[in-house]
Amino acid sequence: MRAVIVYESMFGSTKKVAEAIAEGLADCAEVSVVPVTSADAHILDGADLVVVGGPTHTHGMSRPSTRKMAGKLARKRKPGSEVELVPGAVSGPGVREWLASPGRLEVAGAAFDTRPQGLPAFTGRASKSIRRLLAHHGARIAAPPASFLVEGLTGALVEGELGRARAWGERLSGVTTSGASPGLLTPFAVKSATVREHRGAVSGLGDCSRRS
Image (cartoon, rainbow, N blue to C red; front, side, top):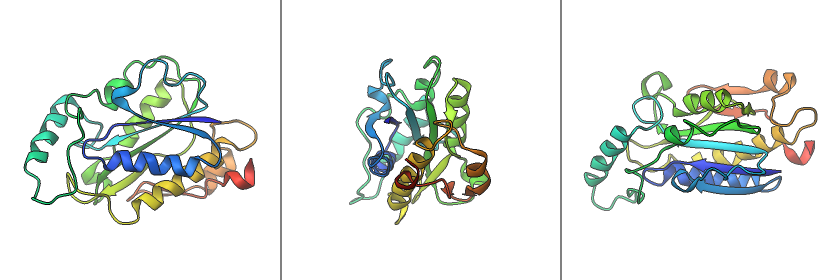
């Protein structure tokens, strides 16, 4: 199986999550991790799975205006902060623009985001919009969207989130390599999947070592 992870990252946290998901997928797939700014029209050629993720801005995916605002926040970060603005992040494009016209997606798809700690009703979840656009373009949704938490608007990932991202990647590979219909959740998997809405986490999706 070939998997492509396309990510947008403002301060590096979403990039780290994308790389951790790739580690989880690596035992079952050939994985490419690609920043959205480098994702050209042929990036999905030959892919079986596309995973798309980005930061949550104003309850959804980033826009040029919110990326500009994030750049201003970065200049106000505390001295000694490990979080820095990713080069090219403000100018974009972001995943919103990339998903505007990818054509027909004949692949399995999954979405993730990074967002501040708190109830999704207050923070929003970009992954829900990403999942909707993936489905709109024909992708077979392989798992519920996942959220990974950061500390504040420009903060580092909360402790343990990279481990959760690796585990999500492992479970995702279990779904996409399962028997009948690649990329689709089977009725059993849908019934048994447990979604913890406050974090967007998914459990019970399978293990490729048992199902491939």
